[in-house]
Each structure stands twice: as C-alpha cells, then as structure tokens.
Amino acid sequence: MSSQTLPPPAAATDAIATQRSGWTIAYLLLAIAPLCWAGNHVLGRAVVGHVPPGGLSMLRWLVAALVLTPFALSHVRRDWPALVEKSGTVIFLSLVGAGVFSTMQFVVARWTPALNMSVLNSVAPVMILLASRVLFGDRLRWLQLLGVTISLGGLMVIATQGDLVRLASLSFETGDLAVIANMLLWAIYCACLRLRPNVHWISFTYVLIVISCIVNMPYAAFEHWTGTTLQANGLTVVAVLYSAVCTSVLAYACWNRGVEMIGAPRASAFLHLIPLYGALLATTILGESLHGFHVAGFLLILSGVWLAARPQTPSALRVTGPVREWKPAG
Image (cartoon, rainbow, N blue to C red):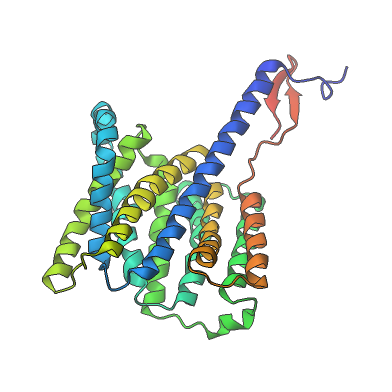
C-alpha cells in the first residue's frame, strides 16, 4: 500500500482534532474582543462632554482592577517571581498597549473627522504584520496579506459609502497623524506579546490593568486641575462600567489569549471586525439605516478575516521517513 494512502494513526488524528479545537477557541476569543471595543465606540459617542479622556481612562482601569482583584490575587502571588523577572517587558507592554494607547483613542477622536478615523484605524492589521516582520522576522504568508487586503477593501467600501471617489477628499492633519501613531503603538504591542512572561493570563491582565491605571492618574489629575471634570450622572456610570468590565477586562483577556494561541500576524485581521460590529450595533441600538454598501463591506471583511486567519496546517496528512512517521502536511 502506498504511504500516501495509509490512514493516520489514532494518536495523530486526536492531535489534529485537539489542534483544530484550539483554533476554534482562539477564533472565538479574537471575535469577542472587537465586539467589546466596537460597543465602546458606540457608547463613546454618547458620552462626549460627560467624561474627559484622561478621567475615563483612569476610571476604566481602576474599576477593572477592583473587579479583577478577587480573582487575580492568588494567581499574581504565584506568578510574582516571573513577573518581577520580566518587569521591564511587562511595564513596556502595559504602557504601549493599554496605558497610553487607550487614552490616545479618546483624545484623537476630538481631533480628526469620523471618516478619517474609520479609514486610518483600518491600517492596524497591516501594521501588525509589518511589526511582526521587522521586530521578529515573521514570514508573511500570501494568504495573510491577501486576507488583510480584502478586509481593508471592505472597510474602504463602508467608510466611503460605496463611492471610492470620497477618498480623494481626505486631508491628513495633526489628528490623523496621531491616529496612525496610535495604531503603530497597538501594532508593536500585539507583535511583542510573545515576550510577556509565561504566567497565567489573569496575572498578566491584572498587572497590565494596574500599571495602566497608575500611568493615567497624572493626566486625569491635570484635567481636573484645568477644570475638565466628570459629570456625575447615570450616563457616566454606564460608560465607566462598560469600559472597565467589557473593554478592559474581557476584551484584553480575550485578545491577549487569542494572540498567544495563533500569533499576532493571523490575529491582526480580526481587528477589521470592529467597524463591522460598530455598524451592526449602530443600526440596532442607535437606529441608523443599513445600506447596500454596508452589506458589501461586511462580506469583504468576513472573507478577508477568514483567509488571513486560516491555519497553516491543512487537513491532509502525509507519511515521512522510512519508519512512516506521521506528521501534519505543511
């Protein structure tokens, strides 16, 4: 019997089934994080003037730390030696991926038009691929590049409402450059997550949250000192609680674990789900109209994410070597 026609042994089949199950979990986690962030964008439109950027960032991380403390302390105590050993890396990731990045998201929203924001935020997956390549020499698969390009095209369709001539009207000013710089910070964070200490995800997320809260305290104090204060009302409370629990704890935990499981280059395409989720939430919650260009853009985004996130290991198996050692093809 030809080695190509031999059936794989049960051990190899079980290993591949386990690997596919892991991919499914990773994809689910990476789909949840953009949903949380998209919900935060929708909510953010309703709290302009109620919560200043620094105050909102500081409170979201503070409340998130309080929520996570009962679940995290035992893990942090056990993982403390590893966290201290790589404290420089932990502080760097906390600053780049949360403390500075999250605050700048709220700040730049005041400086640049919404259309520009939609287009400029979509460069994040491309930046993650490039950062992974430049910093760690990751090989970029053509399917990843094709998938990111297709999903980027879907974003362009939505941002321009199906009229690509609108792109010519974009003007890039200080706020636009700030958005691009902020996306570069996120790309570096995602690419460098592989350097984080080998600790429980709760330990890493908790320390990241605490450091981010401390980093934002001076900015929040400056806002208060200059007269930019929070308005104590129900809308502010909802915004802070959602940002803390969903955007900070749940989203970062899902994203960090998903990137750890499949890598930053493949995970990057899932960021293109943010405008897709945002449009769906806007139509259902805010009552905005759904048009044909939305549907076309959604289909392109989903197709691109599917291509970019496909695992490298195909379903077929091959036998290699004289002893017929079973290995996944590819």
